[in-house]
Length: 283
Ligand SMILES: O=C(O)C(=O)C[C@]1(C(=O)O)C=C[C@@H](O)C=C1
Image (cartoon, rainbow, N blue to C red; front, side):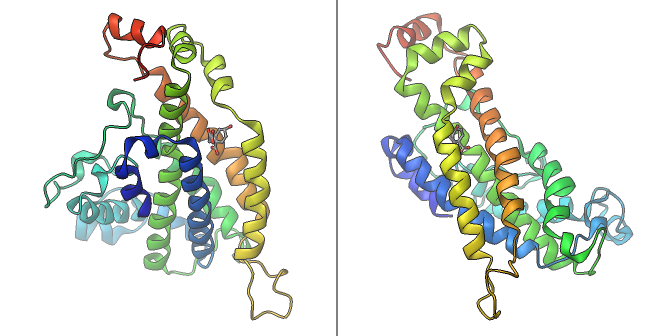
């Protein structure tokens, strides 16, 4: 949970691109370890099917899936701890179903522009259950089931939270880029020029370095040092990790970045937008 505190420390630090990238790099470690954990259980497809566990409906009145129920349960207790008030934490559960925090609110520096905040947890959840879990558990065989729905759901909740934090961090990246070249961004936003915005935020060399680093990390973190050939029986397939980032995590982070930017001027006065466009102010 360290990034929460770090985001709160100062607005300047929260918007330093170098600093944000160090957090993104640390989250690579978190995500890899969570995925290694999830890969210890079988696919357990029934956990993701609404209504597939009848006791849930009987005992809890819950008609959706086991994992969505456990997300709601976990996120409810975390809501009481005020986790969802942090600017880098977004629940999967509809906030209307979550209880109010017990402690008074923390005053986080207003780093993000609130009307522009986006939540893509639905997309993350769908990809996770439809593609990632089957890929992580393929060594057990397709549609495998070990009956360990408790452990597997705990691992799902942790892995989903790590992915969500990473992907929503795109908003800090966007805010940072917006403030460092405000007139150019304002112009593209006003023209609704999504292609231009995408080009402005894309850094191919950063993406390429990330994928190389991630593959290396997966090869190291996935080793079983008790094995006679530790680099053989890896606990995570490095290709699964690289594919996840290349085809899903990075593209969705970019969607978050662009969607946030498209809403970045919402609710501002014409005078304010003019001042941003002429470079007089940067936020
Ligand atoms: O580091 C950045 O500048 C980002 O925008 C983040 C990120 C990523 O998801 O890792 C996304 C887009 C860029 O092309 C490079 C990397």
